[in-house]
Image 1 (cartoon, rainbow, N blue to C red):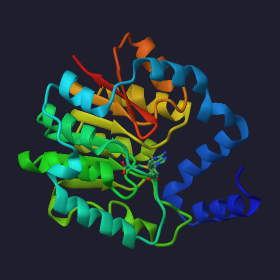
Image 2 (image 1 turned 135 degrees about the vertical axis):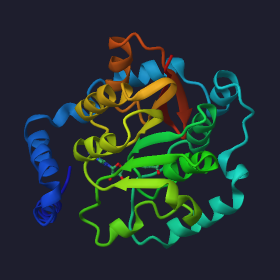
Image 3 (image 1 turned 180 degrees about the vertical axis):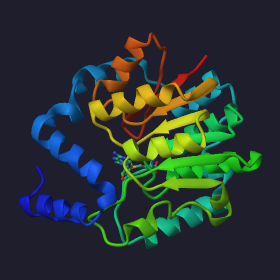
Image 4 (image 1 turned 45 degrees about the vertical axis):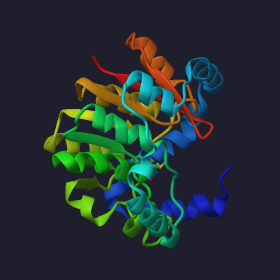
Length: 258
Ligand SMILES: C[S@@+](CC[C@H](N)C(=O)[O-])C[C@H]1O[C@@H](n2cnc3c(N)ncnc32)[C@H](O)[C@@H]1O
């Protein structure tokens, strides 16, 4: 439960950012009328994930049929510098998912255009860009500012190596505002990685919109699919056959679009 003082500070921080008023309205609505969305169907989702889960190594070797070398071993110098950049950042942001899987799905699809929601320090962006830059491809990212932490904007994506940044487009709004702006620039993607609003309703809204934008032969990935049943229900509704990975005690879901 958030403290009253934190709720008040958050409210005033939003008031100072007119570009985030649409998200403020949605947050007020969610907190009053839809508080159960974060964990809806969690038990059902966790059971389902546990029954299907494989390791990232199994997925890369058996499904993508590519030899597995952990991401940090392919890019040891860039990875060490990224760890240093994160250590120097004075703000605390969300954690990373499976960098190896993100790197390999971009390699597998020979991605030219990739989209991700949720950047934080930029670990997933780093992994996607490490593959994309070889083909001069572009990563489109959406991340909402950390409004309570001063200067946090300066640190969103701070672990991304400088040499990759010309291939990176960052849209600093809530997804509901960022995604239409991204689609105005690029509307078809080889890879989509979802790692932002983890509520049930937020996921369903974004999954439906994003899945259509992934081309045939592309890969759709969502992190933390055991948090609630949105990914399970999305797959069932579309008769989609997902792959579930267990990584660091969490589950990611992937769909190879055919
Ligand atoms: C778990 S972190 C992302 C971690 C990142 N993908 C990585 O692997 O390093 C989640 C991020 O999503 C962003 N976020 C949460 N809700 C959002 C929304 N509605 N629109 C855009 N970004 C959002 C947060 O600001 C946060 O930076």
